[in-house]
Length: 594
View 1 (spheres, helix red, strand yellow):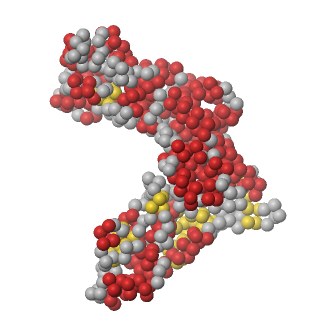
View 2 (cartoon, helix red, strand yellow):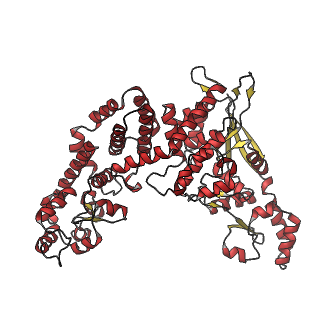
View 3 (cartoon, rainbow, N blue to C red):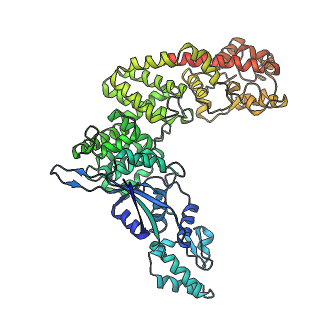
């Protein structure tokens, strides 16, 4: 069976479909990841008559209505989002939201004398030979624009310039290929096509696919739900965007969903800034007890998995259920309570949580257990443990959708404490703590998840920085303090060690810069001798630590073996092994305390 048809359409026809809603694309509030130079090159390719590739659309399956008739679905754009958004920006002059969530116009300038395109800049605005914004020209009066140009540039070759302007104005008349997937394809096939075409370039995720599906629905207010998801993620990063919504989207500002996110107006916590992918995944998994977003597309289409037909009642219920999930996600009490739990585990900075999937599923655990009526004290412990367990084991580092799907089904079918105990017994055995974890700490990658868990353990224990009398590790992390080397880097380099050896994370501690300067590039045996000699002299003291007992306690809380005080270069390898074991022991004690 032919799964698609290929047609050529005028650019202006495609843009008209977008404006009328015939093709549903992600809304303008979504970040546009192309930079201006890519938009410029797209315009130049169209001007030169070069092909710009195909866009791929799929018509939603027809849903059988209650009266027996069929509703014809809209087309969903599943490939070509960036190109279509670039066209609406450059040709129609529409705003886009850039990667920093700034609302901007990408203005493309054109010089008809040399037929060159460029991103508008201050120099171009001062140069009369440039048309500063092609969208104003393409949508204006050709005769008037050409005459104005000749008045400003009387010495140009008028015939050549007229031809250039004519070619510019004809860009909307250029054709673009549209591959339309057959309307009777099942969603599994469309999903497979979707995955295959997104193997390179700026890929669309499964969340993009689902979000396009949500946006294309007006009957069950999918378009409103879509805005809620995008706006919430935007506001988490830029609370000041609230005023823009109030001023420019008055209809949405009246909705109950908007009222539920008003608390973000004064929120500046950046520990967990979810994007639309995170929000939709958590909302879907929590409410539907499924982990694959392709299932969400099916359900929102009204898919009956048993009969393999599409039913309006299923679509209606699915949109309602998803809205409940989104509402729970953006709820102020839920969100802040969850962040409080994460902080209580020592994760006080977003840099300590490198796995977005791990924190997403931790939020799923919180929302799910709360919905089940589990005791709040137990929820706190379970969420902390699951987060740290999943980070230490890299649970969601590969095939996260499959693992999400497996975990949510298990959680839904048995008491959470039973499932957690199963995972701990299977993956956090003595062999893990005594062998696997120390091996994981044998790395020079400072962003190692295990090292971040170690730092979280120090934060939770209110540990002091290395050789600090009063300053806490949490202070050094919060105030963007520096990580320093126990065996000084210069000392190790002078002794012939390369970066992969002197930058071992077992050689790292959070240390005050002024203490690090006093330590200098001396071997540990030398700088500890200095510390001991100066310990009783307040004017000369390196760190403020005044007794040997305080010094030993400081080494213990930083998981630094006391043997370091006699060590030099020949002891470095032994030191790393000792410290990895101590770090692993500290992490284990921390985990069991959660």
